[in-house]
Image (cartoon, rainbow, N blue to C red; front, side):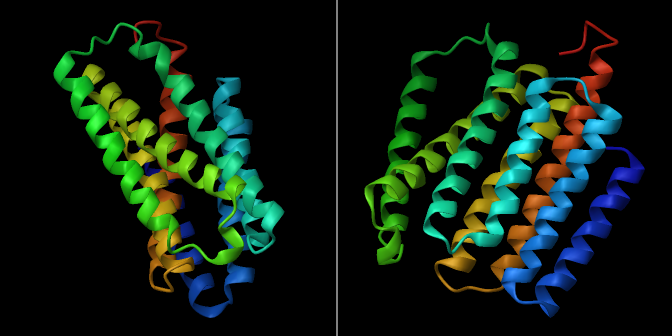
Length: 228
């Protein structure tokens, strides 16, 4: 990761932590959106290389912008839909690089087992949702986000297993950053552990910063066809 990007990421983390500490959650969410928008602007005007990557940044910005109105039921459903689309597009972007990856029976069995465990955990988490969220549409989105979160982690680990380079490592950080952000937000918002808002913001900023680092390397790869 470039040094200036490390500095920017660190600065934005500090600013967001201060916003969480001094402002109420309805206001500090604007700082999350502003942070995502900054990374979107940097990619668009300095490192643009792929339209699908641009779409991912745009979807993440829309998601964080709508997060300001998370208490509005319709916006909440849109937020989950947009985040699912962002994760799906990231998987689709990486998938062609894994087209020749071979899976054995053991890998498939383990994958199915992990999916079943994930569904069970999602079911337990869904029980703690407030009554206003206990409707078929939101629950479908809730489970879908959980499943696709597992898929994006599996995709990034497969990419790392195949290429074992810094770009693959960046992708793993991206996937874990976003997934941990979702989990931390759930713990903070639904379970009332307010300290997790800091971890949520930390994981989200790290995730999108490494997404930019991943994108920078993708732009460089266009000049080198032998790069993954």
